[in-house]
Amino acid sequence: MTEIPRKYIKDDRNQTVAVQLDIDTFEKIEELLENYGLVELMKQTEGTEKFVAAEAKAFYRTLDKAK
View 1 (cartoon, rainbow, N blue to C red):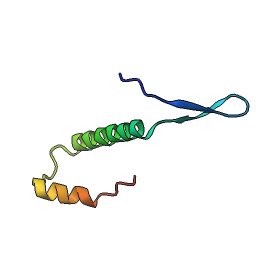
View 2 (tube, helix red, strand yellow):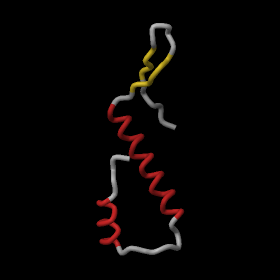
View 3 (spheres, rainbow, N blue to C red):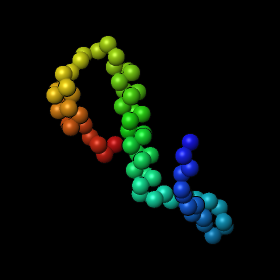
View 4 (cartoon, helix red, strand yellow):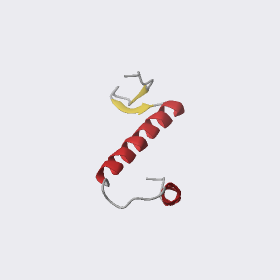
């Protein structure tokens, strides 16, 4: 597994309270999670209604990407 560069944020009692990642690392993690979620969704919907490629792309563009 690739090492994830990070910085730990500590409070005044030297307790770790947060982790800071650079934006490139965050975006890679975010993409991996989105891809994993998509694969899981595809597994759940096997055998259900099928779209042609153009319909699937149009549907995907309507999904809320903020979640």
